[in-house]
Image (cartoon, rainbow, N blue to C red; front, side):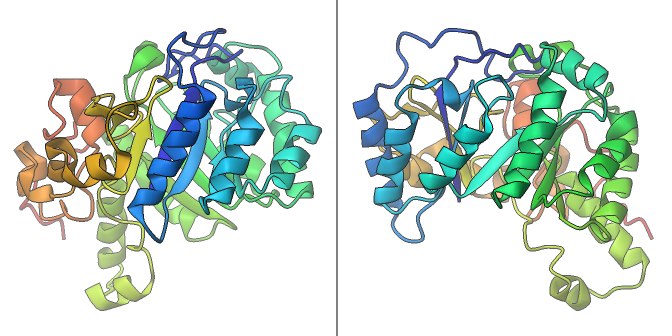
Length: 346
């Protein structure tokens, strides 16, 4: 399980699709150091195996107490990863220091194969160069690295070039994030469902030959595309199971992940900004296990529309975040998916 803690909304970038609508300054009600420590202690209430903590933002490097908080998490036995923004604050020394403080993984965003396109999305010139530099340093320092790439109408045509650019590096995971119109993300155009379906076919083919894991985020219908392709090749259910392609399947938003905002709100996912509690008064483990919203996300039989009747709902479930952003109902159908349940495509 992953817990995403948005440590701050402060960030020097101005990304056009920022979920957090990050700004240069921290929010006055941001969790304090002591409240952060209390959140970390709450995480231990999940019991073993403890969730992985992903420090995100804004820019987690903008928090003055970042390293003491990391030390506190490590002391409690919580594995920590971090997704820093590619600003001038992200130096090689910072990566060395994060490694010394036992950070287990690094997440960086690369949205395009050229500085021109990447920087236009990130809002600040020089971001592409900094990101490529950080990817090279992470490799040198042998830090496990996940690269996240935004999939929107603007970026989709150049995704294969991003793959070519990443291929020489020791990336552990390349995650293609299908845009959800949350926060500033409303200014970018999501892919049309037909184009998304085509791109998912390409992602599936690439994932079978790539030197690293290739995955999608907020596009669980990718799993259906993958299964349909394997079936079309004549693989049986048993062979598909053995191939391991299904090991990461299952609903993600609110199920296996939760998100804590910079002011302590507990949400099923960063892209599903539906606050169901706050760490200042509620406990994260209790909220995850017992709150009705989380409980319904744990149970695909509660889903509505096409996702409710789809034979793939237990291993896809649709993006609950996209359903929420499109309709205000997190149990509704995911509008990115074109699949009509019950029509088996041979």
